[in-house]
Each structure stands twice: as structure tokens, then as C-alpha cells.
Length: 389
Image (cartoon, helix red, strand yellow):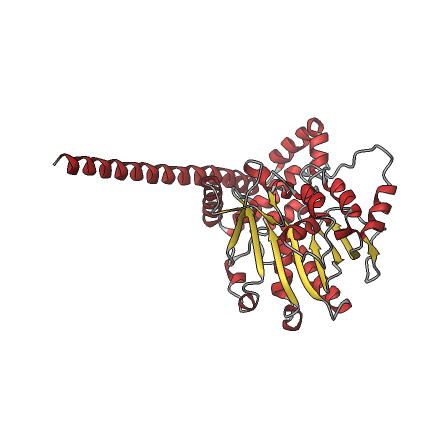
């Protein structure tokens, strides 16, 4: 089936004026935020066209050298950028306000990009979790604290861009954590700014705590937040969602469905499914059961313990762990041994709880399936008996 790259071939020649901005354009711009535009796209309101930014980006890459995006970030993103630069639909879009902040010590990872789409709108693309361990720790912290550092920066970023372009309507979006940041920024914006927001896309982004969803400003944004998840979503079903979500078909299986380039495209839309799969429902139930049974203090110790082990070798990215796995293993084992007993206990407790929750959900599903089969068999038996009588 077709994906984002095919869409660029099919519809890249159609200007936004001829064919209005759509959900596939949204995901393409969300993925664009993963490109390292430092030193290329201005950090303020000054603008550069996407074509110019692409030329500058590829000019600093030695000919023939593969661009490594990291362990979990799609390696096809540079190819997507090449095709966007050649596509009339995207080439003259103007980029500005590139932001990229990383603080390993305080577990902060935030990046964003502003795109003037040429139709009177500005799209704010919030980057999802990248290759950094700081970013992953920040993601895990969503289960422990009401607001993570990247969410605070997302709110300020929206205000900054809104002040720069007071006459423009706004679209916000992101993939994975970027989708969560887009929604957070919209919900935390002042009313005057929220009125200018036309649409917010969370592309398989995690949700929020229930108390955040209960805030009055959520109702003000009702109908303007679009959440899309693949059929066996894991990330997009984390925490709670107040809004309905759209299920899209992915060509991958399991966790790999999180890759936006696996989402199947038909025309100018993603291929829809009626609901998540049984695996998707299972993932949702297991994760919610796990969260419900783990006290807040245990969650915090779990996160600290897990990442103290992962960073024990000095690794700062998933790539570091992958490439130095043999060297990293002894340091990680030592970190586990040297860990305070209550932290180590919390770490082991979390893993045991996850396994137990998984088995509990599976057992309940098996029981329901068995009961359903028994009811169906009884119904067939009654029908057969009635026919004989």
C-alpha cells in the first residue's frame, strides 16, 4: 500500500490553493520537525523556503553518505525532505522558529518548527521523542508528574509564534510525544490565542492525566483536536484521551506501527479502520492496569532506576547503547547492583506488575471468548432441537 512518500509523488504537484491542506500534509510536516535544521532555519521570525533549507541541509552532508536519524526515528525522513523540496506543494513553504533544546541532566528534549503553508495558516510542528535517552526519560515521566519540561516549552513556543504572526490562523501537530505537546500547547494557550487555532493533530501521541482532561478549556477546543492511531497502537493509547480517535491502517505489526511512514494513504487521506485490533485493546488494558496498580512513588522510583541503569555507561542516546552494547553491559549490571534497595525493589516490582497485568488481561479475554463460544454452541443446539421438534 501507499505511504507518505507515494503521496508526495502523487499530489506534490498540487498547490495548497488548488487542493486544501489535509491530514496527510499534517503528518508530513510533523515528521519534518525531526530534521536537524540548526544553523539553517532561523530561530526567530525570519523565514527561509523549504527548498532553500533542504539545499543547505544536504550541502553539509558528504556525497553518498547515509544520514543516520537514530535507532527509532525513520531513516526515510531525509528522502522525504528531498521530495518535498522538489514538490511545488511544499517547496515554497516558509520555515522559521526552529527550536532544539536538550538537557540530559534535567531530562528535557524539545524541538519544534514553524511552517507558513501559504494559505493564510501557520503550522507548528512539534518533534516527538528522538534518539536521546533524556527524551525517553521525559516521556516516562509523564506517568509521574502533571507537567513535563517539554510541555512548558511547547506552551511558550505557541505564544511566541502567535505573537509573531498575529493575523495568521494556526494549525498544530506532531507525531508521538510531539502530538501530546501540540495538544498541551493548545489547551494551555490564552483564550485569544485558542480562538485562532483551527486544528490540532496528535499523530499517535500519548494522552494526559484525568485531572488535566477535566479542565474547562478542554471543552473550548472540542471538535478541533484530531487524534489518529494505528490499529495496534501502544504509544497513542498511553494515559487518557478525552477526544475520540481515528484508527488508521498500518502496513507494519505491533510497536512498529508507530512509524508514521507505515500508515497507509489513499488519495489525500489515511486508510480508515472501524476500530483498533484485539492486540490494540489488549495493549490499552494492560498499560492502564499497570498504571492503576502502581503507586505514584513507585512510578517515580521506577523511572529513576531504569534510566540510571541505561545511562550508567555514559550513553546519551539509544544509538550509543546499540553501538556500545558489549561495553555498556558491565556498567549497567554494576549500576543495578549498586542501586539503593528500595529503588531496585521498585524497578523489579514494576516489571513484575507489568507481567501480571498482561496475564490478567489475557486471562479475562480468554474467559470472555470461552463464555461467548459456549453461548454460541448453546444457541446452535437450541436451534437444532427446535428444528427437530
